[in-house]
View 1 (spheres, rainbow, N blue to C red):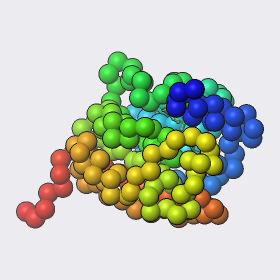
View 2 (cartoon, rainbow, N blue to C red; view 1 turned 120 degrees about the horizontal axis):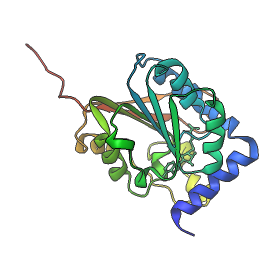
View 3 (cartoon, protein in one colour; view 1 turned 120 degrees about the vertical axis):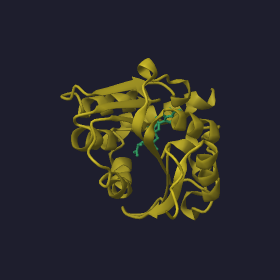
View 4 (cartoon, helix red, strand yellow; view 1 turned 90 degrees about the vertical axis):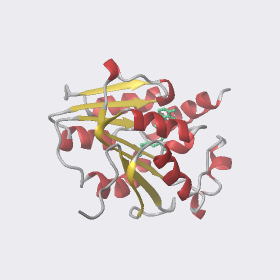
Length: 216
Ligand SMILES: C[S@@+](CC[C@H](N)C(=O)[O-])C[C@H]1O[C@@H](n2cnc3c(N)ncnc32)[C@H](O)[C@@H]1O
């Protein structure tokens, strides 16, 4: 079985088991402090791997309710749970497939691209960061959050436990990849919250625009 099919099967199973409710609850505790600070916008939002759609729903209802919301999700079962959450909204499109193969409709660019706990399932994280950076508007921002990174002891054995190959980068590599993708004002922070059974979450964010001006 290919790596992508293994990941897809894993998340189809989690979705069918319990709707990924526990995972979403744990993640939301760390995601909420980040997404709640995003300004309300009538622009476009893209979420990569929304899982059961808890953050997608929040963004579609609270921050981009006057804008356009897209998601790309590999697992058909996860995508279907996400779709049910937002079925009353007409500003949300959820595509089923891999982000790597995904094509934005009509060359669409996004004001915000967000992803929680997805990028280490990618075999080539650099290429995914570059692809996301290329999908940003000139004022756009990319936010990537992961629990599985080199400095996180709690997640060390996940690849063995899940039976799926995961890509374990150190924090600094995310930082460098954001810069190499042409993003500016790149910052990192560690997000706390939830019961912390999975360790702490690394949040890397960067903007498409010009480097911050220093001095006058
Ligand atoms: C650990 S779950 C996280 C889900 C959600 N973002 C959350 O915070 O709970 C990872 C999600 O990424 C999706 N995923 C994995 N590889 C993907 C890919 N190549 N393209 C799109 N989605 C992917 C999985 O199907 C799964 O729903």
